[in-house]
Image (cartoon, rainbow, N blue to C red; front, side):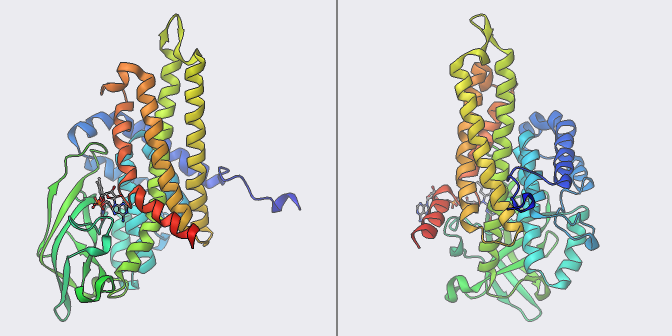
Amino acid sequence: MTHEAVPAALTTLAEDEILFRDSVTEFAEAQIRPHVREMDDHAKIPRALLDQLFGLGIMGIEIPEEYGGAGARFFHSVLAVEALSAVDPSVGVLVDVQNTLVLNAILRWGSADIKRRYLPRLAADTVGAYALSEAGAGSDAFAITSKAVDGGDHFRLNGRKLWITNGNEADIFIVFANINPEAGYRGITAFMVERGFPGFTVGKKEDKLGIRASSTCELILEDCVVPKANVLGEVGKGYKTAIETLNEGRIGIGAQMIGAAAGALTHAVSYTKERKQFGKAVAEFQLVQAQLARAATDVEAARLLVYNAARLHDAGKPFLTEAAMCKLYSSEVAERVTSLAVNLYGGYGYVKDYPVEKLYRDVKIGQIYEGTSNMQLMTIAKQILG
Ligand SMILES: Cc1cc2nc3c(=O)[nH]c(=O)nc-3n(C[C@H](O)[C@H](O)[C@H](O)COP(=O)(O)OP(=O)(O)OC[C@H]3O[C@@H](n4cnc5c(N)ncnc54)[C@H](O)[C@@H]3O)c2cc1C
């Protein structure tokens, strides 16, 4: 075998990937870090920060350059979400939903007309959201009861969506509704809905345990008029759009989890090297060293799963099982590692003056959204059992 034929290590990044990741990290440290506490306290991401994210090109990573985007790959989205989440997983998920759900769905399923109308806005200054879940339809996502009725040149949508990330900031929403409830999931259709459409309102914002700065809102559709040209993909094929975008989206959540876990580990390493008890740095105790070593191994293993799933995606290879595994595992690792970081900070880990209590709260969501851990286990089991 020639040297060239040996595949690179999964963590070996291309030159452009290194530059991109480092620029996002630099931005996150300089522009986000100073505001993390305030954004968490006020449960809000300021518009000025959104403008900076657009300016940096990380709200339109995969949008082709002809529409004003960065023309990069899915793997770049993963790197961006990881780097941002090491500092603030709330900003991480905002960028994640924009790229791995909203843009992915439009790039894959959007008509030429939808791409022309929406991609330039999403690349320039407009936040998107992805609205599938409802009060009675979470894990059983296809049980949605939002309905769309054909009105000639438009559809009329009625229903309520729950838990919609970016609900406060978004102006463009991908909304799933059923055009033929009798046909079950085969009636589900995806629509491009704008905040200004008649009959569309953003409702209550949730008060959450973690990722508090990321908005999670109810959406209310009351005879909401959506032009037929705004059907995303085919009528009755929205279930495919939902399944396929969420398969990709969960790699993004994996990236959010490894970012947060790595961020917490970095804090724990510096703190234990500084903090003295029994006359020496806490990091000098072998028990603590073993805990840190195990956490570092956990983060590395989770990162390999996430990067592998993302690389498979970009190579056009099947990645369904790997995506489920990476989300399942990285969200468990994130819980373990952030919890250890709180422990290693002692009492200081439990208060808001230090960064680790927030990361501990933030990562709990990784086991819930974009398919709970039980749903990931079911996907993996189905694949291995055949
Ligand atoms: C902060 C936040 C942001 C979100 N953002 C979005 C968003 O942007 N867009 C969107 O559409 N949705 C979003 N969601 C919704 C999220 O995807 C759902 O909450 C999630 O899929 C779980 O659904 P559920 O809450 O109805 O729980 P349920 O489905 O009711 O699950 C309850 C429990 O039962 C278990 N369970 C259910 N069915 C089975 C089964 N068959 N076998 C074994 N166990 C099972 C689950 O694993 C879970 O532990 C968000 C949620 C939150 C909290």
